[in-house]
Length: 355
Image 1 (tube, rainbow, N blue to C red):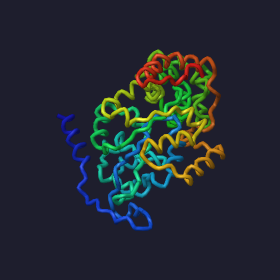
Image 2 (image 1 turned 30 degrees about the horizontal axis):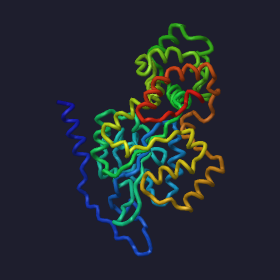
Image 3 (image 1 turned 90 degrees about the horizontal axis):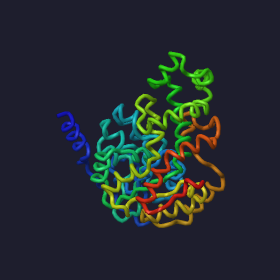
Image 4 (image 1 turned 90 degrees about the vertical axis):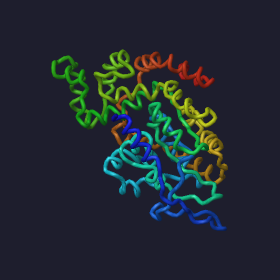
């Protein structure tokens, strides 16, 4: 069957017979040879799996300042990848997307490992993959991930108030889809038949410079909540706005294949408020030593008030209006049962309803 042949193909891609010898560590310390040297690097042992719009870009940048955390060399290896892989994987210097996109597009385990410099025995270094779209992998993909990664691999998820996360994702995702001319069946029909308000029609005509308007969100939110999370009549990104914030549903798939001790949950609001404390927690969780020079860099970046928002690349840099109390209340009401499910699942109250 097609399903069986697809599974066999994926299984073949998850083998790598290339030699993995690495130069012996020099007495003066470890200097990783570049990926261009042809050595195979290690599989990642620290993975930031989500959630999208939860501060993953900021956290990745802080973690990658640690000299023992190896960054994926996407630019060099991406050029050698199949065209489909180049278009779907290795973005924003942190997101390999191997298990979510690259593997099904034709990349194999050797390609994944060549993203990282080789590590000789005894070196403390570990490879990092910060791909927040792993958070919504289906059960079979999570099973493949668990079977492929080393048993010492650790997963980290930064979870943000899902109402705020929804709005951040809306600004990024809707702006990009509308700029490309995308239209959901229902929206296209309303525009064609005159069912859309004049303000909404005007917003859609001019959003190529303004991005997704708040008017579009406010006028559509009730309809989206009714059909959530799938919303088959809407743009595909609407499902993404909802399901990345349904934390318990997604975490259960990981808990089915990874021991809970291997999964660290951070509250994104804590990360924003005290970055150094969050970074220390991740570094300790990964089994690495906290280094004074690394912590000094983290403090320096935090004091600069610099927050890199990957959504700015997709039209979400200048939000067209703060999430207002009415829309926020509707989103909080939608997510409250999902949040309670999360609190019960992990034994921790994140307190988002009171914020």
